[in-house]
Length: 299
Image 1 (cartoon, rainbow, N blue to C red):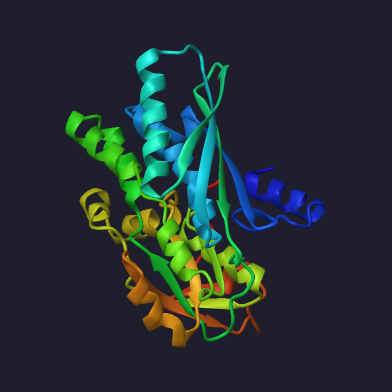
Image 2: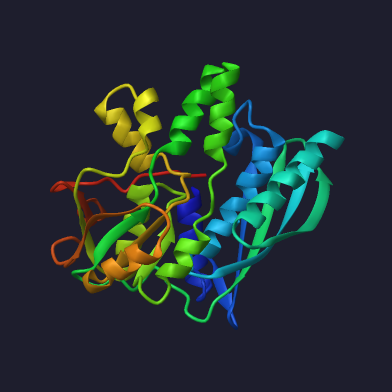
């Protein structure tokens, strides 16, 4: 059973599950777990690991349209190294500061593999679910796609300059400010941690509609430096995931106001369409008229 199947099983038992974070009396709470062998390639600094691990949870807060307030983390490793631990806390603290939140501590444990579990908190009176997209809404995404996939290629090269660039690409800024600007305007939203394609399928399924997406997608220029060809470029941009951008639907009439309030790139990539005749997952989302596979990052 993979992660998505397991989440579906739990969703049948937990009525409040299904969005990027839970909302309890206006407080947003979310938790994540990252592992050395699956999430931190060789060359990832502890500073980057702290930033990225905590940032992943802050991204879930952003996807709910909430203000981020605080984060904690469990740091588990075979041994505690003073400089590594300090670097991790610095990274965690600075990603929180970047979005107006505070890193307030956590827990330590010994484990045979470097592992981090993070929890982030936020506040909102108007959370944005995954389930509100309406036919005719614009389908949009913040920022650019493919940075994490490109970073992995740079890590694999092993050259010190490439590894330094890869670490920088891994340190994304959670889109908390963008999420707040979209709150009250976006009809559905989630982050792109599982990849653009899978995120679109999840939003479409939750909202009971389809999405007609069109090229060009906002793929980051760094992808062109590492991609083998056009197919590989699409793989990194649409399927690899871990970019932590916001994927959302916005009513056509609200687009101009949203763009005016955002300080990040915001690209319309398609339109929400009727789901009639699109019951199969392979037809739920199309790219340039062709089925876009429901495929992405899977733990």
